[in-house]
Amino acid sequence: MYFRYGDSWRHWNGSYRQRGSESISRQPDLVAHSVLQREYPNIVVLSGSTYDNRVALTFDDGPDIRFTPQVLDVLNNYQVNATFFLMGARAAERPDIVRRIQAEGHAIGNHTYWHPNLTEESLERVHWEVTATEETIEQILGFRPRLFRPPYGFLNREIVELLGDMGNAVILWNVDSLDWMELGTDAITNTVLANTAPGSIILMHDGGDETADLTDTVDALDVIIPRLQAAGMEFVTIPELINISEAK
Image (cartoon, helix red, strand yellow):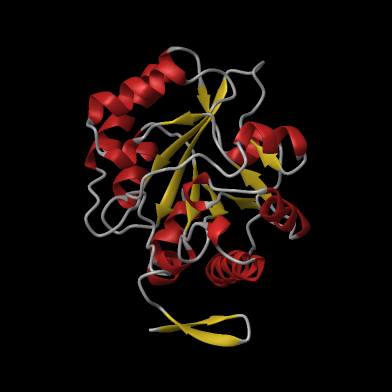
């Protein structure tokens, strides 16, 4: 398969076919999230206000026909809205799920087209990944998302500045569920509950590579949501949490 990249056509080979997997070992960011947030406070977001009992669930790497509908079912059961950062390639394959996400009141963000480590790519490639996903989502839903999350959370200053110039808000997180490691429902639940506080942005996943099993993520939501609600937390979308528009 071939895809458009700049002014040439490149083969979809192993180096580009990341397909949303978090299975590679996470390395320290080239520039730490906290540093980037401090240096680019109008672009990079780690959390919301600590004065309001509101938190945001976020899901990466979908839409996935296996797990996204299950996640949506749980969210619907609790009347909770979340934010989904979609891969362009998967959105193009499953526009029906993308439409369902929006129809049920959830916010949508950009998670690149093929899920590469952007810090290993040219700025031209970064621009293509963002723009191709924007165009795909616009074709399905009629708008270009402002919210952007980099694969693996990997960023550097050049990429942040480019994303800012493109009109994006870079949405990171301050609670990592580590659900992609498939450590079990209890481990996911305990990690989230132990680290969530007012304003938290919680990172979870509704998609993965062909071998990923996110059943524990779905099951953990059935514990995390009511427990945090009982503690007085309200679940909101990222646009609601930080008062920003979903669309450019």
